[in-house]
Length: 467
Image: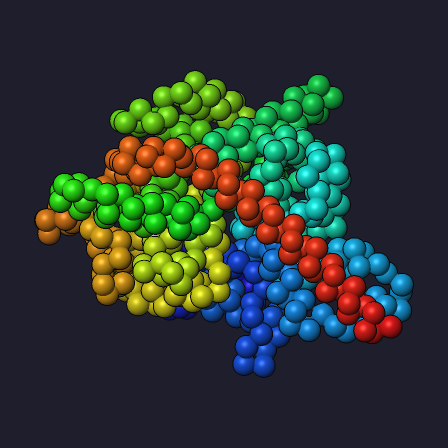
């Protein structure tokens, strides 16, 4: 099966995909829910063929949800007869499910090797470097022959684990639990150093230039920046700052920050991506990244050299893109601002469906415009993020900056948003986006740990029932 923008159905997100820059790639976050009497593999095929899913991600929580549906019970009965432990069953079932998903994506992967990939996450129970690397290597080997990413969590050993994994020349990592610009720089540096280690090793072994290019170019990677959770921390603090403020003008400016801080951070991280991997100048008008500029320059220069050996850019993947029930925003808040070259987005099913409905409403001309546009690099409209109806935010966001200006709508740059958030909201709380990022990363790791333990216990309980 071959996919193209011209042949894509009206509801397919492939209408926005730009294969020239790997732009606007949308992944489904988790195994599709069982609906209408259809098993998850049937629904996944529909997500690909009718709705334009280009990839799929999984983790401990998402696998546990699949286990709880009972759809894996027949396999559990087989493992009972084989005398497998709960840990062995967990590994086998998780790998079988991700392998089946990857095979469903095979036609996408054959057409576009950077796409059609299913992510399987390393065990959340492993936090030390060597055990984590062994687990990453096991997963990569188990999923050999299909389109796959091996998820490496951004723990304390995360950047080093990424470096060591990439240096093997066999592992394509999806770096997860990234919540801040520092997390991004640390783990991206790990990717670059791993590529450098690999290429230098192969050169030292006398491997030909063509073979080095073949090996390096086979490695693909995404760096998963989690977004919505940042706003859920910062938005209540903005409300507190508004309540303290007596100047009406500043109150208005504070209110405009709600629902925009996480988006602004992601936009600046994308600017880092553009500088490091595409060689573009990095604009820092507020001096927010002054201390990091020497490091950013070194990383930019390193990739410029690695690219001559066939190395691929590490795409930025927007994760945690679902708007939560307590957020009064458009369901596309963490989708539309991130359309652009080299971009990817992994969405829970509800957000994916909302995006499908949005794309279905576009004319061919509108879809083509968004396919070629870089909204990621554009400022946000200077309007409340919770403007009603929610579709009004989506409509105004799609206007070009010139069209907004004609309608009297100002622009909020990512730099301005981040500076105001720092000065008016975060500093008074003795906090920063980096501190929030560390806290959210640790909380996420704890959640995956708890879910994996709960999954192992659920498997053990089922094994006892089936004995």
